Amino acid sequence: QVQLVESGGGLVQTGGSLRLSCAASGRTFSSYTMGWFRQAPGKEREFVEAVPWNSPTIYYSDSVKGRFTISRDNAKNTVYLQMNSLKPEDTAVYYCAAKQYGVVTTTPVSYDYWGQGTQVTVSS
Image 1 (tube, rainbow, N blue to C red):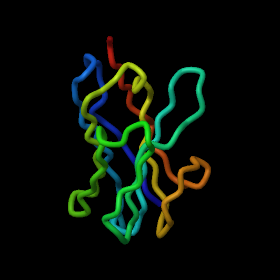
Image 2 (image 1 turned 120 degrees about the vertical axis):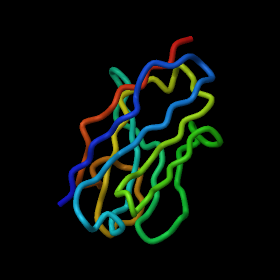
Image 3 (image 1 turned 60 degrees about the horizontal axis):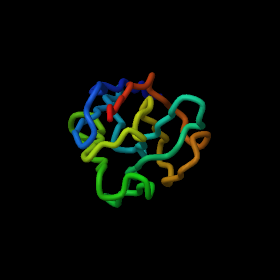
Image 4 (image 1 turned 180 degrees about the horizontal axis):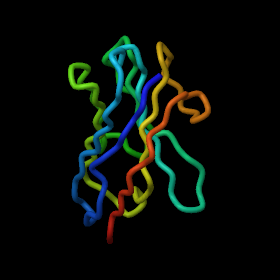
């Protein structure tokens, strides 16, 4: 089992940047596929990016292509989401998610562990 804690959210102007962090407990972080999802008010939770446990390949949604980058540091049990060129439509609660030895999927129900979320607000 793993516990996830996100940080790094906040208020930023259009075009600005933020870096989210997700710290995981436990000693088997390298065996977890990690993903970032977001949920805006009144909308369903949607996939943002993910990195599998056994490959450096990054999977991302078209809405963040070229602007967001997920990375992981297995030595620090942490996954990051670097967000650049932020837009008002990126405003949402951002969640970190994990599943052990799993393939990357874009559906929230396929992930077993979730953080509490961190708010990102982009002002126009």
